[in-house]
Image (tube, rainbow, N blue to C red; front, top):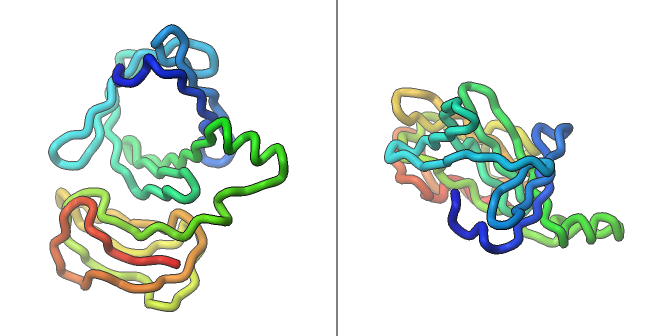
Length: 175
């Protein structure tokens, strides 16, 4: 996690829609709400993410990434944490009453890890809302419910049940 910290980083992170943190760098060190933090984040070969923070170890799985809304949902030790990221430009535009997210198209749903598609829960043309279940992907003998990162319309289903997929495979196209 030490790479790229020579550059100035300033972000606002909102976790589960109600806890807000400021993340920045100071003299090359990562700070959370003004306090220096030491942590290590690594992607494991099985698609999981290992997080070491303050002497504690956590295992995370990416549930979904919504690039248009700058959001990510992580399953950390069995609990879902949705994090919305705002950069300085997002905060400035928001203070001016502008929202760049409305100008972005919906991003396709991709496999966050290799696995087997068990069930597809939506149909082409269906309107979906943020948090709606889209597809069940089995990975490492666990069923993972992939959810919508934002409101959209299902444009196309790119896979079928009982199909093996690799990490990054487009599963569902949205518009």
